[in-house]
Every structure is written in structure tokens, then in C-alpha cells.
Image (cartoon, rainbow, N blue to C red; front, top):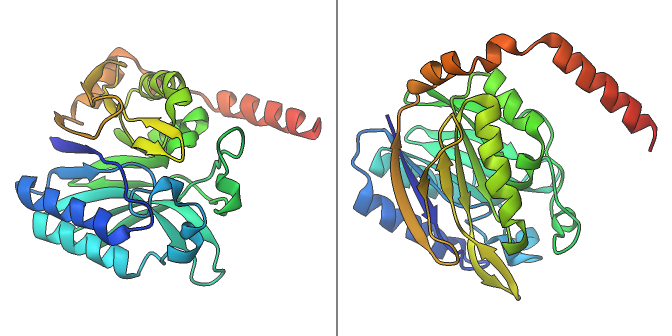
Length: 279
């Protein structure tokens, strides 16, 4: 069993110490110390999604003070923390919108967001570089899980790749505003059903410069049923236990892996190349 803590917190913009402090306080009060706890925050929680130019000033490398503090929290609570931060590459200096997973032994996984929305109210490409490479799959107490960020959910290939690499639970951390609520509530359920996986979606909340974020974090089971749900438009914490061992049973009912073929990939790639050449 994994015990998922969806920490639907509003960030204090540009104040990582304050935001980390809230995580520390929560872990000290609520982690049972059995190694099965997973604390999940929204996208860019550590620095605040709407921190704008402060991201460029405050970003840290993945082996900096912020990650070290998070590892100490995870070690003290014997838990895993999945959160988001502005992360600076030490070689290039490029800043990324990154998701990290840390545990008792240190940094477990780092993912740099691949799809940066830069339309309408979004301006991520102004601050962040585009991440390269696969979305990661890693283990929490022997359970394979995957990690991605917000707009990545619009691209089903991301979730499919996590499933093919063995993930039974997929975590999406998010900073989705009010006008995107229907999209995410639809897509996250679809990603769960398409891949017969648990999907955990944790969204930020609050008003920043007139832009509202709806919260509404939730967990979906492998057949698409919402099994835990946070409040809309206010901070909330929801704790739910999931049993990843049930995924195999669900997949016997809906045999996605058995019926998925190499031709599906070939057709997608061929049509992508044809469309891409048209632009």
C-alpha cells in the first residue's frame, strides 16, 4: 500500500524557505514512519508558479540547499516527497520547471518539464528551458511510479511511455488555472483509463495577479473512478491509501498491454513525420 498525501497548498511567491517549512511541519505531524508515505505538492511549489522573474534569480541546482533540506525532511519522516521547483543546470545555467522526488537516501528522480505552455495567460517559455528525455519511472518501496508535470497530460504519449516502463502509479503535479479545470479533470481520468494505472493529480490553488487556480486535486483508479478529491478554490490536504498490487488485476479486466502493438507506434510515428513536414 502507498499512503498518498495530496498537499494542495498555495505557495508564498519567491519564498522557498517558507514553503519548505510548511512541508516540514506537515511531515513531522503526519508521517507514520513506515516508508509508505508519499507527500505530493503542486507544480513549482517550492518557488511559486507565478514568481515570474524570481525564478531566474532563485533557481538552484538539484544538489543545492533546497534538495538537501527536502532530503532531511524525508529522512526524518521516513517518507517520499514529490514536489516542483525552479532548477538551474550547473553547466549551462538554463533554468527548468522541474519535478523532483526525494527520499531518505537522497534525490530519487528529476524531471524537467518537456511541454511549456506559452499561449493565452501562460508564459513559461520566457523563464524555462525545454526539458529533454523520457519522463522518469522509479521505485517507492518496490512500487514503480512515474512522474510528469501539468501540460504534459495533454500529450497521451507521456503517460503511455510511463506505463510501458512499468509504472503502476503516475504522479502529475500541476499549476492549472480556472479555465483549464475541465481539461485536466477529463485528461487525467483518460490517462488512467488508457494505461490502467492509478493517477495522482495535485494542483495549486489561490489568486495570483488576478489569475485564479482551482485546486481540485484528485486520485483516479485504473478504471477511471475518482477515489479521492480535494476542495476547489481553497487549500486542502487529502490523504488516501492505494494498493498498486491491484493494477495487475485491473489489467486482466482491461488488457491494454496485451493488445498494444508495435504497429500502433509505427503508425503514430509515420503520421507525425508526415504532419511535421507540412509546417
